[in-house]
Length: 209
Length: 263
Image (tube, rainbow over all chains, first blue to last red; front, side):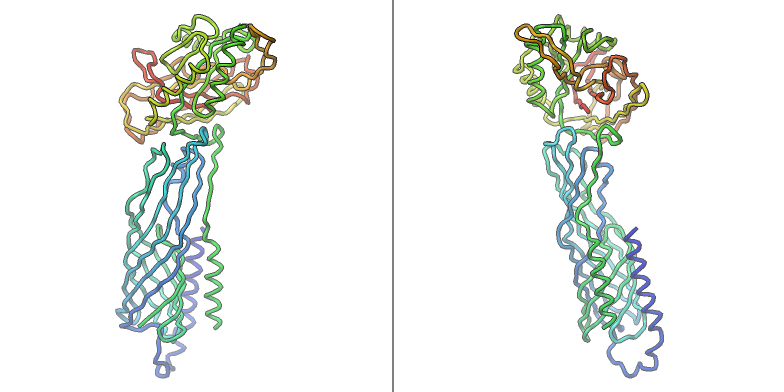
């Protein structure tokens, strides 16, 4: 539920910026040479990501004992894009650093402890719609992520007979966010969305050139 | 500037949602089945509260075995009519005859042996041998039970950790734990208010259970549901537990305990 609220909030912010800035600078177009987004530019994001929902079957694992899940690591994400038109860019993304340890304790023999170390990473394509507001600093956008999330699963424990998660799964979803440029080339971004096996919130540095 | 502050505030507020731990704690025997991946050996004790050698030899040997193996055995006390058991179930008679217990105290080990006056070392050797032979459990079983009126409703789940091709039965026994009674001895005073371990009260599905598989692949899960009428000599139905035993069968009799569980 909270993930959907994050997505709705960011989409609302995107919509409000788009609406508020639909035409106000039309008459000032000639005054501003600097635009937050323009055709032909190359953009990139580097930052941290949050709210990644892992997909191991909790009900299945709970069948074998008491379950404890610990997420660890620093989720990092990078993306890049090329502005094909004055509102559409295409690019790609990569994220990694997500680890979790799932520990199962046999309730009838507490010394029988086993489980899995999961590691997740993902990559894919990002078509992005940039709101054509022609603002000097703010660049709201929305788009799709179409890619794959790879899961590495390492079993531990002597009596671990459960199937691990290892493999690749398709990941697709929607997102919206905004860049804010402090200078001509450097700024920050925040982005949220809704997607399976993909971090739902990203923040970090934005660059363009 | 305002917009920078807005973005920063939004990012910081949502940063706190990055949770690092979540925990699910099933309560076994109530509403969550917990299947053990460990192997448990089954040990039996046939003794009576009126039997003096049972108090001197049988009771200490069996309880030493229980204390030395708290999580890796399913111990079952079988009593003829005595201060603890008024009603001998028909399944008990079958089990008694199978192990050919000639007197008290006698012991039984899984489904493949018995001894008269077994000591703690004998029990331990049998337990160790069975666990070594089943170091990798092929099948596991978990159960829940609930007292409803005068009946015990039992649910089981059997999970295959490997492909198994063999006739397997699941026996669902009901035992009463922490029964307190005096036990006479042949040397020394009576053991007053002795705490007896899991005492056999009957079976929900026959002496050797019912067939659950002849061939199953890894990952197969088999659910079962049983009802057991609580006998009148049960002292405290809150102390009733379920001992589930998976037997490999040949010619209608068990030849191996494939795995067992108790709670």
